[in-house]
Length: 624
Image (cartoon, rainbow, N blue to C red; front, side, top):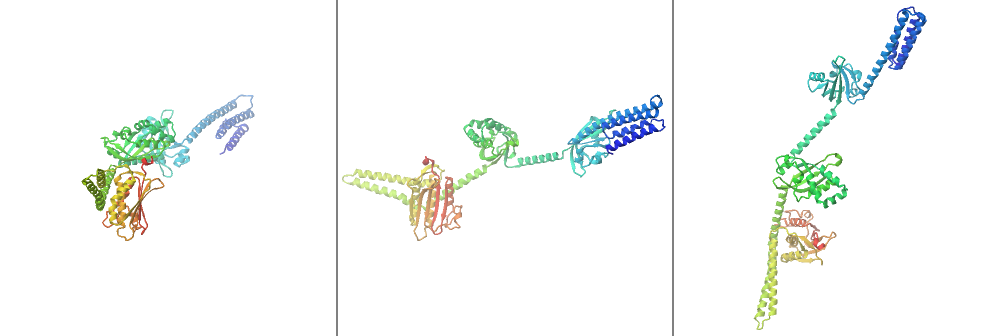
Protein backbone atom coordinates (compact mmCIF):
# COMPACT_ATOMS: atom_id res chain seq x y z
CA UNK A 1 0.00 0.00 0.00
CA UNK A 2 1.19 3.51 -0.73
CA UNK A 3 2.05 6.09 1.90
CA UNK A 4 -1.06 8.11 1.20
CA UNK A 5 -3.17 4.97 1.56
CA UNK A 6 -1.57 4.17 4.91
CA UNK A 7 -2.15 7.72 6.09
CA UNK A 8 -5.82 7.57 5.05
CA UNK A 9 -6.35 4.23 6.78
CA UNK A 10 -4.69 5.51 9.93
CA UNK A 11 -6.90 8.63 9.97
CA UNK A 12 -10.11 6.65 9.29
CA UNK A 13 -9.26 4.12 12.00
CA UNK A 14 -8.50 6.88 14.53
CA UNK A 15 -11.80 8.67 13.71
CA UNK A 16 -13.74 5.40 14.00
CA UNK A 17 -12.21 4.72 17.42
CA UNK A 18 -13.12 8.28 18.42
CA UNK A 19 -16.76 7.79 17.42
CA UNK A 20 -16.99 4.52 19.26
CA UNK A 21 -15.33 5.93 22.34
CA UNK A 22 -17.37 9.11 22.36
CA UNK A 23 -20.83 7.98 21.25
CA UNK A 24 -21.22 4.46 22.59
CA UNK A 25 -21.84 3.48 26.20
CA UNK A 26 -18.92 1.02 26.33
CA UNK A 27 -16.88 1.42 29.45
CA UNK A 28 -13.76 -0.40 28.23
CA UNK A 29 -10.44 1.21 27.23
CA UNK A 30 -11.56 1.69 23.66
CA UNK A 31 -8.99 4.46 23.21
CA UNK A 32 -6.23 1.88 23.40
CA UNK A 33 -7.15 0.98 19.81
CA UNK A 34 -5.53 4.23 18.74
CA UNK A 35 -2.26 2.26 18.90
CA UNK A 36 -3.28 0.47 15.71
CA UNK A 37 -3.63 3.82 13.92
CA UNK A 38 -0.13 4.82 15.07
CA UNK A 39 1.31 1.51 13.85
CA UNK A 40 -0.33 2.06 10.45
CA UNK A 41 1.25 5.52 10.30
CA UNK A 42 4.63 3.99 11.18
CA UNK A 43 4.37 1.83 8.07
CA UNK A 44 4.97 4.92 5.97
CA UNK A 45 8.57 5.03 7.42
CA UNK A 46 8.12 8.78 7.90
CA UNK A 47 8.89 10.21 11.35
CA UNK A 48 6.45 13.09 10.87
CA UNK A 49 3.61 10.72 10.11
CA UNK A 50 4.17 8.90 13.42
CA UNK A 51 4.28 12.10 15.44
CA UNK A 52 1.20 13.59 13.74
CA UNK A 53 -0.72 10.33 14.20
CA UNK A 54 0.29 10.18 17.88
CA UNK A 55 -0.75 13.77 18.54
CA UNK A 56 -4.00 13.29 16.68
CA UNK A 57 -4.83 10.11 18.59
CA UNK A 58 -4.04 11.78 21.94
CA UNK A 59 -6.24 14.76 21.08
CA UNK A 60 -9.09 12.44 20.02
CA UNK A 61 -8.73 10.44 23.25
CA UNK A 62 -8.99 13.58 25.41
CA UNK A 63 -11.87 14.93 23.29
CA UNK A 64 -13.82 11.68 23.55
CA UNK A 65 -13.30 11.59 27.32
CA UNK A 66 -14.54 15.20 27.61
CA UNK A 67 -17.61 14.57 25.53
CA UNK A 68 -18.51 11.38 27.38
CA UNK A 69 -17.62 12.18 30.99
CA UNK A 70 -16.59 15.79 31.28
CA UNK A 71 -13.63 17.00 33.28
CA UNK A 72 -15.33 17.76 36.66
CA UNK A 73 -15.07 14.28 38.16
CA UNK A 74 -12.01 12.01 38.20
CA UNK A 75 -13.17 8.41 38.13
CA UNK A 76 -12.37 5.11 36.50
CA UNK A 77 -13.03 6.54 33.02
CA UNK A 78 -10.26 9.05 33.62
CA UNK A 79 -7.96 6.20 34.60
CA UNK A 80 -8.82 4.33 31.37
CA UNK A 81 -8.17 7.51 29.38
CA UNK A 82 -4.79 7.87 31.10
CA UNK A 83 -3.93 4.26 30.23
CA UNK A 84 -4.89 4.94 26.62
CA UNK A 85 -2.68 8.07 26.52
CA UNK A 86 0.21 6.09 28.02
CA UNK A 87 -0.21 3.33 25.41
CA UNK A 88 -0.22 5.95 22.66
CA UNK A 89 2.96 7.54 24.05
CA UNK A 90 4.79 4.21 24.49
CA UNK A 91 3.77 2.99 21.03
CA UNK A 92 4.90 6.27 19.51
CA UNK A 93 8.29 6.05 21.24
CA UNK A 94 8.84 2.43 20.19
CA UNK A 95 7.77 3.22 16.61
CA UNK A 96 10.25 6.10 16.44
CA UNK A 97 13.08 3.92 17.83
CA UNK A 98 12.24 1.11 15.42
CA UNK A 99 12.20 3.55 12.55
CA UNK A 100 15.64 4.89 13.53
CA UNK A 101 17.05 1.36 13.77
CA UNK A 102 15.47 0.45 10.46
CA UNK A 103 17.00 3.47 8.78
CA UNK A 104 20.39 2.62 10.21
CA UNK A 105 20.13 -0.95 8.95
CA UNK A 106 18.94 0.28 5.57
CA UNK A 107 21.90 2.62 5.33
CA UNK A 108 24.24 -0.25 6.17
CA UNK A 109 22.52 -2.40 3.60
CA UNK A 110 22.95 0.34 1.01
CA UNK A 111 26.66 0.47 1.83
CA UNK A 112 26.87 -3.28 1.36
CA UNK A 113 25.15 -2.87 -1.98
CA UNK A 114 27.85 -0.42 -3.03
CA UNK A 115 30.57 -3.04 -2.48
CA UNK A 116 32.32 -4.57 -5.49
CA UNK A 117 32.36 -7.90 -3.64
CA UNK A 118 29.50 -10.35 -3.36
CA UNK A 119 28.11 -10.18 0.18
CA UNK A 120 25.35 -12.22 1.77
CA UNK A 121 24.29 -13.14 5.28
CA UNK A 122 23.19 -16.63 6.28
CA UNK A 123 22.37 -18.45 9.46
CA UNK A 124 24.16 -21.47 10.89
CA UNK A 125 22.09 -23.70 8.68
CA UNK A 126 23.20 -21.83 5.57
CA UNK A 127 19.84 -20.13 4.86
CA UNK A 128 20.38 -16.75 3.19
CA UNK A 129 18.84 -13.70 4.86
CA UNK A 130 20.61 -10.89 2.97
CA UNK A 131 21.86 -10.74 -0.64
CA UNK A 132 23.61 -7.61 -1.93
CA UNK A 133 23.41 -6.08 -5.39
CA UNK A 134 26.87 -7.33 -6.51
CA UNK A 135 25.78 -10.88 -5.64
CA UNK A 136 22.71 -10.37 -7.80
CA UNK A 137 24.83 -9.15 -10.73
CA UNK A 138 27.53 -11.81 -10.39
CA UNK A 139 25.50 -14.93 -9.61
CA UNK A 140 22.38 -14.01 -11.57
CA UNK A 141 19.80 -14.59 -8.80
CA UNK A 142 17.87 -11.61 -7.47
CA UNK A 143 17.60 -10.99 -3.73
CA UNK A 144 14.01 -12.29 -3.71
CA UNK A 145 15.16 -15.51 -5.40
CA UNK A 146 18.16 -16.02 -3.12
CA UNK A 147 16.80 -15.10 0.31
CA UNK A 148 15.50 -18.19 2.07
CA UNK A 149 17.63 -20.59 0.00
CA UNK A 150 20.55 -22.63 1.36
CA UNK A 151 23.73 -20.97 0.07
CA UNK A 152 25.75 -24.13 -0.64
CA UNK A 153 22.86 -25.70 -2.55
CA UNK A 154 22.05 -22.55 -4.49
CA UNK A 155 25.66 -21.87 -5.50
CA UNK A 156 26.81 -25.52 -5.69
CA UNK A 157 29.85 -24.57 -3.62
CA UNK A 158 32.95 -26.74 -3.89
CA UNK A 159 35.46 -26.42 -1.03
CA UNK A 160 39.18 -27.01 -1.15
CA UNK A 161 38.93 -28.84 2.20
CA UNK A 162 36.18 -30.70 4.06
CA UNK A 163 33.13 -28.55 4.84
CA UNK A 164 33.18 -29.61 8.50
CA UNK A 165 36.76 -28.42 8.91
CA UNK A 166 35.83 -25.03 7.43
CA UNK A 167 32.88 -24.66 9.82
CA UNK A 168 34.99 -25.69 12.83
CA UNK A 169 37.64 -23.11 11.97
CA UNK A 170 34.93 -20.48 11.58
CA UNK A 171 33.43 -21.22 15.01
CA UNK A 172 36.80 -21.51 16.79
CA UNK A 173 38.37 -18.34 15.36
CA UNK A 174 35.33 -16.35 14.41
CA UNK A 175 36.71 -15.96 10.87
CA UNK A 176 37.73 -18.09 7.89
CA UNK A 177 39.41 -17.32 4.58
CA UNK A 178 39.92 -19.62 1.63
CA UNK A 179 39.28 -20.48 -2.01
CA UNK A 180 35.99 -21.83 -3.33
CA UNK A 181 34.36 -22.78 -6.58
CA UNK A 182 30.76 -21.69 -7.15
CA UNK A 183 28.34 -21.72 -10.05
CA UNK A 184 26.21 -18.90 -11.37
CA UNK A 185 22.61 -19.16 -12.44
CA UNK A 186 23.81 -19.64 -16.03
CA UNK A 187 26.10 -22.51 -15.01
CA UNK A 188 29.42 -20.67 -15.26
CA UNK A 189 32.07 -21.79 -12.77
CA UNK A 190 33.66 -18.98 -10.73
CA UNK A 191 36.89 -19.04 -8.73
CA UNK A 192 36.06 -17.32 -5.44
CA UNK A 193 38.20 -15.84 -2.70
CA UNK A 194 36.00 -16.10 0.43
CA UNK A 195 36.12 -14.30 3.79
CA UNK A 196 33.63 -15.37 6.45
CA UNK A 197 32.86 -13.70 9.80
CA UNK A 198 30.50 -14.88 12.59
CA UNK A 199 28.00 -12.62 14.42
CA UNK A 200 27.27 -13.65 18.02
CA UNK A 201 24.08 -13.02 19.99
CA UNK A 202 23.85 -11.50 23.48
CA UNK A 203 24.59 -14.89 25.01
CA UNK A 204 27.81 -15.28 22.98
CA UNK A 205 26.33 -17.97 20.78
CA UNK A 206 27.09 -17.88 17.00
CA UNK A 207 24.03 -16.75 15.09
CA UNK A 208 24.60 -15.34 11.60
CA UNK A 209 27.53 -15.57 9.19
CA UNK A 210 28.59 -12.72 6.93
CA UNK A 211 30.23 -14.00 3.74
CA UNK A 212 32.30 -11.58 1.64
CA UNK A 213 33.24 -13.13 -1.69
CA UNK A 214 35.56 -11.85 -4.44
CA UNK A 215 35.42 -13.17 -7.98
CA UNK A 216 39.04 -13.99 -8.91
CA UNK A 217 38.24 -16.03 -12.02
CA UNK A 218 39.93 -13.58 -14.38
CA UNK A 219 42.85 -13.14 -12.04
CA UNK A 220 43.27 -16.89 -11.73
CA UNK A 221 43.13 -17.23 -15.51
CA UNK A 222 45.71 -14.44 -15.94
CA UNK A 223 47.93 -16.06 -13.32
CA UNK A 224 47.62 -19.44 -15.00
CA UNK A 225 48.47 -17.88 -18.36
CA UNK A 226 51.45 -16.13 -16.78
CA UNK A 227 52.67 -19.37 -15.23
CA UNK A 228 52.24 -21.18 -18.53
CA UNK A 229 54.08 -18.41 -20.37
CA UNK A 230 56.90 -18.51 -17.82
CA UNK A 231 57.16 -22.28 -18.17
CA UNK A 232 57.20 -21.99 -21.96
CA UNK A 233 59.84 -19.27 -21.83
CA UNK A 234 61.93 -21.31 -19.37
CA UNK A 235 61.63 -24.40 -21.57
CA UNK A 236 62.73 -22.41 -24.61
CA UNK A 237 65.48 -20.74 -22.55
CA UNK A 238 66.90 -24.05 -21.37
CA UNK A 239 66.36 -26.10 -24.55
CA UNK A 240 67.64 -23.55 -27.06
CA UNK A 241 70.94 -24.34 -28.76
CA UNK A 242 71.52 -20.61 -29.03
CA UNK A 243 73.26 -19.12 -26.03
CA UNK A 244 71.07 -16.70 -24.08
CA UNK A 245 72.14 -14.21 -21.41
CA UNK A 246 69.76 -12.21 -19.26
CA UNK A 247 71.46 -9.04 -18.09
CA UNK A 248 70.51 -6.12 -15.85
CA UNK A 249 71.47 -2.78 -17.42
CA UNK A 250 69.59 -0.57 -14.95
CA UNK A 251 72.86 0.71 -13.45
CA UNK A 252 74.10 1.59 -16.95
CA UNK A 253 70.84 3.44 -17.66
CA UNK A 254 71.27 5.44 -14.44
CA UNK A 255 74.89 6.28 -15.34
CA UNK A 256 73.83 7.46 -18.79
CA UNK A 257 70.98 9.54 -17.40
CA UNK A 258 73.42 11.18 -14.99
CA UNK A 259 75.36 12.50 -18.01
CA UNK A 260 72.29 14.55 -19.00
CA UNK A 261 73.18 14.43 -22.72
CA UNK A 262 70.98 14.43 -25.79
CA UNK A 263 70.75 11.24 -27.83
CA UNK A 264 72.37 13.05 -30.74
CA UNK A 265 75.49 13.85 -28.67
CA UNK A 266 75.85 10.64 -26.70
CA UNK A 267 77.80 8.80 -29.41
CA UNK A 268 80.44 11.56 -29.62
CA UNK A 269 80.73 11.69 -25.85
CA UNK A 270 81.28 7.93 -25.54
CA UNK A 271 83.79 7.97 -28.42
CA UNK A 272 85.85 10.67 -26.69
CA UNK A 273 85.51 9.21 -23.18
CA UNK A 274 86.71 5.59 -23.26
CA UNK A 275 87.07 5.63 -19.47
CA UNK A 276 83.29 5.90 -19.13
CA UNK A 277 82.84 2.90 -21.46
CA UNK A 278 85.35 0.87 -19.44
CA UNK A 279 83.58 1.79 -16.21
CA UNK A 280 80.19 0.86 -17.72
CA UNK A 281 81.21 -2.69 -18.63
CA UNK A 282 81.20 -3.98 -15.02
CA UNK A 283 77.74 -2.42 -14.52
CA UNK A 284 76.15 -4.88 -16.98
CA UNK A 285 75.29 -7.52 -14.40
CA UNK A 286 74.49 -11.06 -15.57
CA UNK A 287 71.27 -12.44 -14.06
CA UNK A 288 70.95 -15.80 -15.80
CA UNK A 289 72.44 -17.85 -18.63
CA UNK A 290 71.06 -20.90 -20.38
CA UNK A 291 72.84 -24.26 -20.66
CA UNK A 292 73.91 -23.59 -24.27
CA UNK A 293 75.98 -20.59 -23.23
CA UNK A 294 77.33 -22.44 -20.20
CA UNK A 295 78.62 -25.14 -22.55
CA UNK A 296 79.95 -22.52 -24.96
CA UNK A 297 82.29 -21.02 -22.36
CA UNK A 298 83.03 -24.20 -20.42
CA UNK A 299 80.97 -23.50 -17.27
CA UNK A 300 79.39 -26.15 -15.05
CA UNK A 301 76.39 -24.03 -14.05
CA UNK A 302 74.80 -20.62 -13.99
CA UNK A 303 76.43 -19.81 -10.65
CA UNK A 304 79.71 -19.15 -12.47
CA UNK A 305 78.12 -16.11 -14.14
CA UNK A 306 76.95 -14.19 -11.08
CA UNK A 307 79.16 -11.35 -12.16
CA UNK A 308 79.21 -8.66 -14.82
CA UNK A 309 79.48 -9.16 -18.59
CA UNK A 310 82.98 -7.70 -18.33
CA UNK A 311 84.20 -11.19 -17.40
CA UNK A 312 83.17 -12.59 -20.79
CA UNK A 313 84.60 -9.84 -23.01
CA UNK A 314 88.22 -9.48 -23.98
CA UNK A 315 90.20 -6.29 -23.54
CA UNK A 316 90.20 -5.63 -27.29
CA UNK A 317 86.41 -5.92 -27.63
CA UNK A 318 84.79 -2.96 -29.37
CA UNK A 319 81.25 -4.29 -29.66
CA UNK A 320 80.30 -3.23 -26.13
CA UNK A 321 80.98 0.38 -27.07
CA UNK A 322 78.69 0.14 -30.12
CA UNK A 323 76.02 -1.71 -28.09
CA UNK A 324 76.23 1.00 -25.42
CA UNK A 325 75.70 3.68 -28.06
CA UNK A 326 72.65 1.81 -29.43
CA UNK A 327 71.26 1.43 -25.91
CA UNK A 328 71.79 5.12 -25.12
CA UNK A 329 70.12 6.20 -28.36
CA UNK A 330 67.04 4.09 -27.66
CA UNK A 331 67.55 1.48 -30.39
CA UNK A 332 65.53 -1.71 -29.87
CA UNK A 333 68.45 -4.05 -30.57
CA UNK A 334 72.08 -4.29 -31.67
CA UNK A 335 73.82 -7.03 -33.66
CA UNK A 336 77.52 -7.73 -33.97
CA UNK A 337 80.36 -10.21 -33.99
CA UNK A 338 82.93 -10.61 -31.24
CA UNK A 339 84.87 -13.15 -29.20
CA UNK A 340 83.93 -14.44 -25.75
CA UNK A 341 86.60 -15.41 -23.26
CA UNK A 342 85.78 -18.85 -21.85
CA UNK A 343 86.50 -19.79 -18.25
CA UNK A 344 89.65 -21.67 -19.33
CA UNK A 345 90.92 -18.72 -21.37
CA UNK A 346 89.84 -19.88 -24.83
CA UNK A 347 88.48 -17.29 -27.26
CA UNK A 348 85.14 -18.30 -28.80
CA UNK A 349 84.06 -16.37 -31.93
CA UNK A 350 80.35 -15.58 -31.76
CA UNK A 351 77.56 -13.68 -33.49
CA UNK A 352 75.18 -11.96 -31.08
CA UNK A 353 72.01 -9.90 -30.93
CA UNK A 354 71.15 -7.75 -27.90
CA UNK A 355 67.54 -6.71 -27.41
CA UNK A 356 66.96 -3.61 -25.30
CA UNK A 357 63.66 -3.04 -23.46
CA UNK A 358 61.89 0.27 -23.89
CA UNK A 359 62.29 2.54 -20.89
CA UNK A 360 58.52 3.02 -20.73
CA UNK A 361 57.97 -0.72 -20.27
CA UNK A 362 59.52 -0.70 -16.81
CA UNK A 363 61.53 -3.80 -17.75
CA UNK A 364 65.19 -3.39 -16.89
CA UNK A 365 66.46 -6.70 -18.26
CA UNK A 366 68.42 -7.05 -21.49
CA UNK A 367 68.50 -10.30 -23.48
CA UNK A 368 71.57 -11.29 -25.49
CA UNK A 369 71.35 -14.16 -28.00
CA UNK A 370 74.73 -15.68 -28.84
CA UNK A 371 75.64 -18.12 -31.64
CA UNK A 372 78.96 -19.95 -31.60
CA UNK A 373 80.53 -19.58 -35.07
CA UNK A 374 83.73 -21.50 -34.33
CA UNK A 375 82.84 -24.20 -36.85
CA UNK A 376 81.81 -21.60 -39.41
CA UNK A 377 85.04 -19.71 -38.89
CA UNK A 378 86.97 -22.96 -39.35
CA UNK A 379 84.95 -23.71 -42.49
CA UNK A 380 85.73 -20.22 -43.80
CA UNK A 381 89.42 -20.74 -43.12
CA UNK A 382 89.25 -24.11 -44.87
CA UNK A 383 87.41 -22.51 -47.78
CA UNK A 384 90.03 -19.77 -48.06
CA UNK A 385 92.76 -22.40 -47.91
CA UNK A 386 91.04 -24.41 -50.65
CA UNK A 387 90.63 -21.26 -52.67
CA UNK A 388 94.33 -20.54 -52.26
CA UNK A 389 95.09 -24.10 -53.43
CA UNK A 390 92.88 -23.61 -56.47
CA UNK A 391 94.46 -20.25 -57.18
CA UNK A 392 97.88 -21.86 -56.95
CA UNK A 393 96.79 -24.68 -59.26
CA UNK A 394 95.48 -22.09 -61.68
CA UNK A 395 98.79 -20.24 -61.59
CA UNK A 396 100.69 -23.47 -62.21
CA UNK A 397 98.38 -24.31 -65.11
CA UNK A 398 98.85 -20.82 -66.50
CA UNK A 399 102.62 -21.13 -66.24
CA UNK A 400 102.44 -24.45 -68.03
CA UNK A 401 100.66 -22.72 -70.90
CA UNK A 402 103.14 -19.81 -70.78
CA UNK A 403 106.30 -21.95 -70.80
CA UNK A 404 107.23 -20.81 -74.26
CA UNK A 405 106.72 -17.18 -73.31
CA UNK A 406 108.87 -17.65 -70.21
CA UNK A 407 111.64 -19.31 -72.21
CA UNK A 408 111.45 -16.53 -74.79
CA UNK A 409 111.54 -13.82 -72.11
CA UNK A 410 114.51 -15.43 -70.30
CA UNK A 411 116.39 -16.15 -73.52
CA UNK A 412 116.30 -12.49 -74.52
CA UNK A 413 118.53 -11.22 -71.65
CA UNK A 414 120.71 -14.34 -71.89
CA UNK A 415 121.30 -13.74 -75.59
CA UNK A 416 121.96 -10.06 -74.88
CA UNK A 417 124.52 -11.08 -72.21
CA UNK A 418 126.31 -13.38 -74.65
CA UNK A 419 126.30 -10.72 -77.36
CA UNK A 420 127.57 -8.02 -75.03
CA UNK A 421 130.24 -10.38 -73.66
CA UNK A 422 131.51 -11.30 -77.11
CA UNK A 423 131.57 -7.61 -78.11
CA UNK A 424 133.61 -6.81 -75.03
CA UNK A 425 136.07 -9.58 -75.79
CA UNK A 426 136.53 -8.23 -79.33
CA UNK A 427 137.26 -4.74 -78.01
CA UNK A 428 139.84 -6.24 -75.67
CA UNK A 429 141.63 -8.27 -78.46
CA UNK A 430 142.32 -5.22 -80.57
CA UNK A 431 145.88 -4.02 -80.76
CA UNK A 432 144.84 -1.01 -78.80
CA UNK A 433 141.96 -2.14 -76.51
CA UNK A 434 139.01 0.28 -76.37
CA UNK A 435 138.35 0.28 -72.67
CA UNK A 436 135.35 2.57 -72.91
CA UNK A 437 133.56 0.13 -75.23
CA UNK A 438 134.58 -2.73 -72.95
CA UNK A 439 133.10 -0.91 -69.95
CA UNK A 440 129.88 -0.24 -71.86
CA UNK A 441 129.64 -3.90 -72.84
CA UNK A 442 130.18 -5.02 -69.24
CA UNK A 443 127.46 -2.58 -68.07
CA UNK A 444 125.10 -4.09 -70.62
CA UNK A 445 126.01 -7.58 -69.33
CA UNK A 446 125.23 -6.53 -65.75
CA UNK A 447 121.95 -4.91 -66.75
CA UNK A 448 120.79 -7.90 -68.77
CA UNK A 449 121.77 -10.23 -65.90
CA UNK A 450 119.69 -8.22 -63.51
CA UNK A 451 116.82 -8.30 -65.96
CA UNK A 452 117.04 -12.09 -66.18
CA UNK A 453 117.14 -12.33 -62.40
CA UNK A 454 114.02 -10.17 -62.11
CA UNK A 455 112.23 -12.32 -64.67
CA UNK A 456 113.06 -15.50 -62.75
CA UNK A 457 112.06 -13.85 -59.42
CA UNK A 458 108.77 -12.69 -60.88
CA UNK A 459 107.96 -16.15 -62.26
CA UNK A 460 108.87 -17.83 -58.97
CA UNK A 461 106.66 -15.40 -57.04
CA UNK A 462 103.82 -16.02 -59.47
CA UNK A 463 104.19 -19.78 -58.95
CA UNK A 464 104.82 -19.82 -55.23
CA UNK A 465 101.99 -19.98 -52.62
CA UNK A 466 102.37 -17.08 -50.23
CA UNK A 467 100.01 -15.02 -48.06
CA UNK A 468 98.25 -11.98 -49.42
CA UNK A 469 100.48 -8.90 -49.39
CA UNK A 470 98.40 -5.76 -49.02
CA UNK A 471 100.77 -3.15 -50.40
CA UNK A 472 100.51 -0.10 -52.64
CA UNK A 473 101.49 -0.70 -56.26
CA UNK A 474 101.50 1.24 -59.47
CA UNK A 475 99.02 -0.39 -61.78
CA UNK A 476 101.30 0.38 -64.72
CA UNK A 477 103.96 -2.01 -63.41
CA UNK A 478 101.41 -4.79 -62.82
CA UNK A 479 100.02 -4.37 -66.35
CA UNK A 480 103.52 -4.32 -67.86
CA UNK A 481 104.63 -7.49 -66.08
CA UNK A 482 101.41 -9.32 -66.94
CA UNK A 483 101.79 -8.30 -70.57
CA UNK A 484 105.35 -9.66 -70.69
CA UNK A 485 104.16 -12.99 -69.24
CA UNK A 486 101.48 -13.47 -71.93
CA UNK A 487 103.43 -11.94 -74.83
CA UNK A 488 104.78 -15.26 -76.15
CA UNK A 489 101.46 -17.06 -75.64
CA UNK A 490 99.56 -14.43 -77.60
CA UNK A 491 102.26 -14.32 -80.30
CA UNK A 492 101.92 -18.08 -80.77
CA UNK A 493 98.19 -17.68 -81.55
CA UNK A 494 98.88 -14.64 -83.78
CA UNK A 495 97.10 -12.33 -81.35
CA UNK A 496 97.99 -8.65 -81.21
CA UNK A 497 98.04 -7.02 -77.77
CA UNK A 498 97.23 -3.29 -77.63
CA UNK A 499 97.74 -1.49 -74.32
CA UNK A 500 96.14 1.95 -74.03
CA UNK A 501 97.11 3.23 -70.58
CA UNK A 502 96.21 6.71 -69.38
CA UNK A 503 99.00 9.24 -68.82
CA UNK A 504 98.40 9.40 -65.05
CA UNK A 505 98.11 5.83 -63.86
CA UNK A 506 96.97 5.51 -60.25
CA UNK A 507 98.19 3.35 -57.41
CA UNK A 508 96.13 0.48 -56.04
CA UNK A 509 96.48 -1.44 -52.77
CA UNK A 510 96.53 -5.21 -52.81
CA UNK A 511 98.57 -8.28 -53.61
CA UNK A 512 100.77 -7.77 -56.64
CA UNK A 513 100.82 -11.42 -57.69
CA UNK A 514 97.06 -11.92 -57.34
CA UNK A 515 96.22 -8.81 -59.37
CA UNK A 516 98.78 -9.87 -61.95
CA UNK A 517 97.17 -13.30 -62.12
CA UNK A 518 93.75 -11.73 -62.79
CA UNK A 519 95.10 -9.76 -65.77
CA UNK A 520 97.04 -12.77 -67.10
CA UNK A 521 93.91 -14.98 -66.94
CA UNK A 522 91.78 -12.37 -68.70
CA UNK A 523 94.31 -11.81 -71.51
CA UNK A 524 95.03 -15.54 -71.99
CA UNK A 525 91.28 -16.32 -72.09
CA UNK A 526 90.79 -13.55 -74.65
CA UNK A 527 93.61 -14.95 -76.84
CA UNK A 528 92.33 -18.52 -76.61
CA UNK A 529 88.81 -17.39 -77.53
CA UNK A 530 90.19 -16.12 -80.88
CA UNK A 531 92.65 -18.98 -81.59
CA UNK A 532 90.45 -20.60 -84.24
CA UNK A 533 88.98 -17.61 -86.04
CA UNK A 534 90.17 -16.32 -89.40
CA UNK A 535 89.55 -12.61 -88.82
CA UNK A 536 91.70 -10.14 -86.91
CA UNK A 537 92.82 -11.26 -83.49
CA UNK A 538 93.26 -8.25 -81.25
CA UNK A 539 93.25 -7.97 -77.45
CA UNK A 540 92.89 -4.40 -76.19
CA UNK A 541 93.72 -3.42 -72.61
CA UNK A 542 92.56 0.05 -71.58
CA UNK A 543 92.76 1.97 -68.30
CA UNK A 544 90.52 4.79 -67.08
CA UNK A 545 88.98 6.37 -63.98
CA UNK A 546 85.18 6.04 -63.67
CA UNK A 547 82.71 8.54 -62.24
CA UNK A 548 83.03 7.17 -58.68
CA UNK A 549 86.80 7.70 -58.70
CA UNK A 550 87.64 3.99 -58.96
CA UNK A 551 90.34 2.73 -61.28
CA UNK A 552 89.03 0.65 -64.20
CA UNK A 553 90.78 -1.78 -66.55
CA UNK A 554 88.92 -3.22 -69.53
CA UNK A 555 90.09 -6.22 -71.56
CA UNK A 556 88.37 -6.50 -74.95
CA UNK A 557 88.79 -9.03 -77.73
CA UNK A 558 87.55 -9.37 -81.28
CA UNK A 559 86.46 -12.99 -80.87
CA UNK A 560 83.08 -14.64 -81.28
CA UNK A 561 81.79 -13.33 -77.94
CA UNK A 562 79.93 -15.15 -75.17
CA UNK A 563 76.64 -16.96 -75.72
CA UNK A 564 73.70 -15.23 -73.95
CA UNK A 565 72.88 -18.40 -72.03
CA UNK A 566 76.46 -18.70 -70.78
CA UNK A 567 76.88 -15.09 -69.66
CA UNK A 568 74.93 -15.36 -66.33
CA UNK A 569 76.97 -18.43 -65.32
CA UNK A 570 80.33 -17.18 -66.50
CA UNK A 571 81.78 -16.66 -63.01
CA UNK A 572 80.33 -19.79 -61.42
CA UNK A 573 82.90 -22.33 -60.18
CA UNK A 574 83.52 -25.29 -62.51
CA UNK A 575 81.61 -23.70 -65.37
CA UNK A 576 83.71 -23.60 -68.55
CA UNK A 577 83.25 -23.41 -72.31
CA UNK A 578 86.85 -24.49 -73.06
CA UNK A 579 87.62 -28.08 -73.82
CA UNK A 580 89.66 -29.49 -70.95
CA UNK A 581 89.18 -26.34 -68.86
CA UNK A 582 88.83 -26.49 -65.07
CA UNK A 583 86.16 -23.77 -64.87
CA UNK A 584 87.92 -22.08 -61.94
CA UNK A 585 89.87 -19.26 -63.59
CA UNK A 586 87.14 -16.62 -63.80
CA UNK A 587 85.60 -17.65 -60.44
CA UNK A 588 88.99 -17.15 -58.77
CA UNK A 589 89.46 -13.85 -60.61
CA UNK A 590 86.14 -12.45 -59.36
CA UNK A 591 86.79 -13.62 -55.78
CA UNK A 592 90.26 -12.09 -55.88
CA UNK A 593 88.98 -8.76 -57.18
CA UNK A 594 86.16 -8.62 -54.61
CA UNK A 595 88.66 -9.38 -51.84
CA UNK A 596 90.51 -6.25 -53.00
CA UNK A 597 87.31 -4.19 -52.71
CA UNK A 598 86.66 -4.13 -56.46
CA UNK A 599 84.33 -5.67 -59.00
CA UNK A 600 84.72 -7.84 -62.08
CA UNK A 601 81.98 -7.97 -64.70
CA UNK A 602 81.58 -9.16 -68.29
CA UNK A 603 79.43 -8.15 -71.24
CA UNK A 604 79.26 -9.44 -74.74
CA UNK A 605 77.42 -9.10 -77.99
CA UNK A 606 77.58 -12.42 -79.89
CA UNK A 607 79.84 -12.04 -82.91
CA UNK A 608 81.38 -8.78 -81.63
CA UNK A 609 83.79 -10.04 -78.98
CA UNK A 610 83.70 -9.91 -75.19
CA UNK A 611 84.60 -7.17 -72.71
CA UNK A 612 85.72 -7.77 -69.15
CA UNK A 613 85.68 -4.76 -66.82
CA UNK A 614 87.81 -4.72 -63.69
CA UNK A 615 87.39 -1.87 -61.15
CA UNK A 616 89.62 -1.31 -58.11
CA UNK A 617 89.53 1.39 -55.43
CA UNK A 618 92.32 3.93 -55.63
CA UNK A 619 94.91 3.64 -52.86
CA UNK A 620 94.76 6.38 -50.22
CA UNK A 621 98.40 7.23 -50.83
CA UNK A 622 97.55 8.42 -54.33
CA UNK A 623 94.59 10.47 -53.08
CA UNK A 624 96.85 12.13 -50.50
